[in-house]
Structure formats: structure tokens, C-alpha cells
Image (cartoon, rainbow, N blue to C red; front, side, top):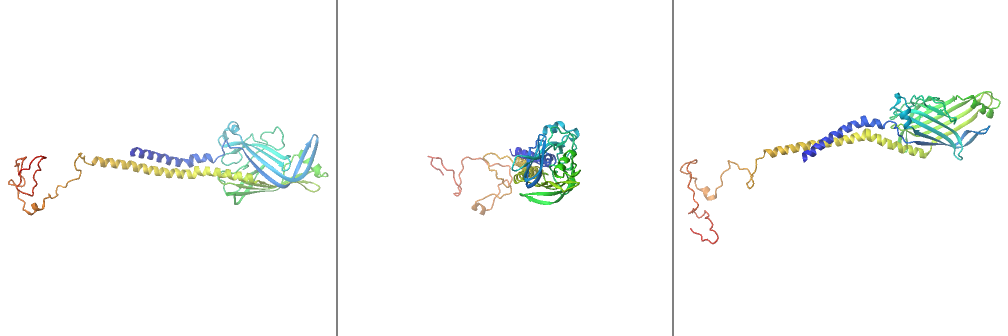
Length: 401
């Protein structure tokens, strides 16, 4: 029984050691990639007392004005596992995923939509950076049909790499349609999570604005101007979990001005968007769960499996060797006849004599210490020596001397 248990523990120990060695090399990489079946997520940012441009079209008439109030921006990310399987080219299969993303900016006090956009893009599963996919598109006008390939995404967009470093990253800006460096500036604690802080500064960049969009603005805010441009500035601060690359918090201080060739500039947007507390809390909880899974598989799991494997291996070897030693000792012991005294007798032990016999000199038989003569057997003997006990008579029999 002990032999079977020892062999089983030995096999279990070997299996656990192999499992411990394989976890960080084969299993851990699978949890440090964007999954195909990622659950949809929604992030909400709020801007208090913001200035914003509101364009309202009613039939042929267009109303353009700059309003002031609280804004709410929601970004919804919806992974597309079926499109990922069917639409990605061969060189991206297994390495990238397709996401659909929708953003809507509304007034906090009314259901009016201030701006919105939708996009479809491919992201690398490990780095989180945009993948070069020809079928990506961006719709900012609300049109029903959007030309495929009308945008070229690059750099980080909605997340950072798994295992982000303390260095600068290129982050895509949707208004500029290109990536701009985001500099690493330090670490901060956010609800118990240590996050890396990155800052991207965009200052006085001229946006590529279609003439059809620029003319109504000049007519409304600078009637005497013949041309103008929209100048864009943004300080984007990203708090990133270095383990998963997920955004823990985001802040965007946006400013857009219409600068005509004559007349004064008009602020079209002045808003300070920050993740609300509910979004930050959900981001932190998601980060904690994913950190636990990654740590369990890549660090704690191998350690626990390795320790248990070594213990099982040592105990198994001890049981097997102990059983074999016991069996060998059992085979070496002489057989003991039932009813006999198993105590070994020393051959050189002095014979035991009573006190009286020990005082008298020992006389050897006539034949010497070794003789071939065998004394005659007698079944009825008497001793004249009173110290020698006589045979006790049977019950009902008189003792005779």
C-alpha cells in the first residue's frame, strides 16, 4: 500500500513541477493579450461649465451658437470577434482584434447631442497599438455611409501595452489624425492602484477643416472675414495601469478657436473632461481582477505548483525507499517457529548452577568431557539427595520413597 502511495506521490510531484515550469512560458502569454471575447465597456467623462459649439439644422435653416453648460462624454468599446475571425488579413490573424468604438457628447441638462463619432479599427493584442488594416474607417459627420480606409490609425489609441514601460509613447489624436508623443511624467496612486502618468501636449495646431464646414462659421462669427482657420490645443493626461495597459483615469483639457483673417477669435470649445468617479472605480476593479489573474498564472501559480511538486516528490521517494528497506529487513530475519522463544542464546554463556553445586568441585564422567557412552534411560528414578525434588504423585496416589 505504501509503495503504491509513494509511486503516486512521485508521479504527482513530477506533474506539478512540469506544470509549474509551463505556466509562465505557455499559459501566462495567453492572458497578457487582448481576448477575442472581451466584454463591451463604457467610459464616461464629464466637463463642468464648458463652452461648446452647437449646430442645429432644421430643414434648410442652420442655427450656429456657442453655449455654456455641463457636458457628458461616453465612449463605448464593442469588440467584434466574428469580424476578427473573418475579415482580418492573414498577416494579422491571431495577432490583432477588431473593435467598434462609439463616442457621444451630450448636454448634462438635456438629451441634446453636441457631437459624436464612430469608428472601426484593428488593434494588436499585446501592444494595444493600432494595426495597419485597410478596412478601418472613421465617421465624424454622422453620415450613413463612410468610406473605408479614410483614416490611418497609428500608435496607442484606447489602451497601452501589457507591461507598459516608464517611457514616452505615441498616442493617436482624432482631431489631428496622427499620433503625438505622450511623455511619462511619474507614478500616482488611484484608489489603491499604482498607475503610470503620461501627458500629451498639443498646442495651437491648425486643424484640416473642409471649406464647407469653415464658411458657415466665418459667416456667423466673422462676417467680414474671407478666410480663417480653427486652432486646436489639448492637454491629455492618461493614468495607465502598467500591468494590463488599461486606462485607469483620463483627463482632456480641450480648446478650439476660430481665428479669422480679420476680426477677433471665437472660442468654439473650452472643456475640461475627466472620468467620473463611477468609471474610475470600475476601471480600478477591472484592473485588480486582471492583475490577480496575470499574477496567479505568471508568478504565484508556478511558485505554489513548484513547492507542492517538490513536497510530493520528496514524500513519494521517502515512502518508496522506506518500503523497500522494510521489505529487505523482513527477508533477512530468521523464521521463528510458533511457540518458541525468539530470543537468541549465546553459545558461550556459562551454565546456570545452584549455589550448592557451585561450591563442590566439578567431576567429569569417566569418558571425559566428550564421551561416546550414553547413560541408560530410566523413567523411574529416585534421589537420595533431599534437595532434589521428587516426582509429585498423581491425584489419589500415595507418595512412595
